[in-house]
Amino acid sequence: MIVTLEQLGFGQALTPDEMLAFFEVSLEIEVVILFFLVGLGTIILSTIVLVVYILELNPKDILMKAKIE
Image (tube, rainbow, N blue to C red):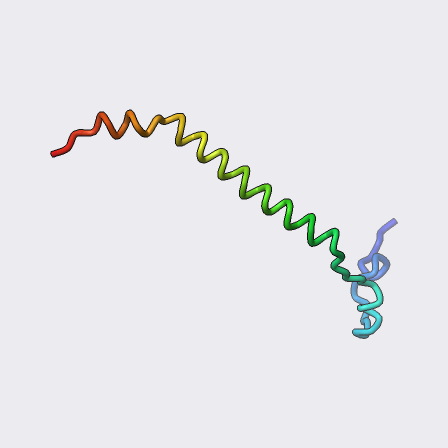
């Protein structure tokens, strides 16, 4: 059995009102808070990883061993 694109719903002309009926877009406060917390967590995690990496290099010893010419 061969399924055509028209049978799958492609190629049908919809009016803008019919198209909008298929989509429900809402932005609830829980979603906003979740995105804020995920973004803040990402920033904090990346900062902590960078600080730990820099401190493992021991910048004080590196600067003390540098030659001043």
